[in-house]
Image 1 (cartoon, rainbow, N blue to C red):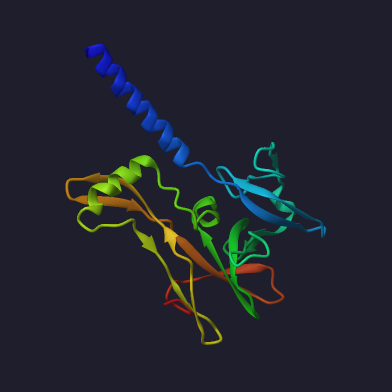
Image 2 (cartoon, rainbow, N blue to C red):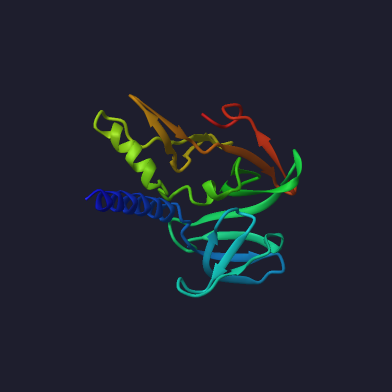
Length: 210
């Protein structure tokens, strides 16, 4: 009886671990890749561990191959749809390495958004990739009205209009007693003047952010 109970416990722990790992998997997104030489490619894009190691495959069940991000001009996810998003690898005036950023406003002064980590939070920001352990932590607090934490910004554009930035998910990473802690992705904003090739970091709530 003890051995059967031990087996059940180990099985449940293994199952929970495997589900946790599976839930954190990075999905493939239909994308159009525009290269600097003018050529284009359409396929399922996948950012496994970093935005600087993109992989693409023609079909979901086919094998993937690595893309050299230095040759990429633009990445357009969900092309020709209402959910289309544009990503680029651009230089900035505060370092020598390129940044993976999303174009959210195009004009004489364009606005980009980037994340502090390897870019996967930004690329997958519309996906809830909460792990099983995080779900269990959150469920403990759902009964008392605590929901998954999300954050959103509203941009005050140079033309005077307001534009909401899509909600970004945050994830619980632990809980104790009556408190839960969450790891919220940190996003930064940049501007790019027409004719220039380097982004400039903008302080939050300083120019066009509310």
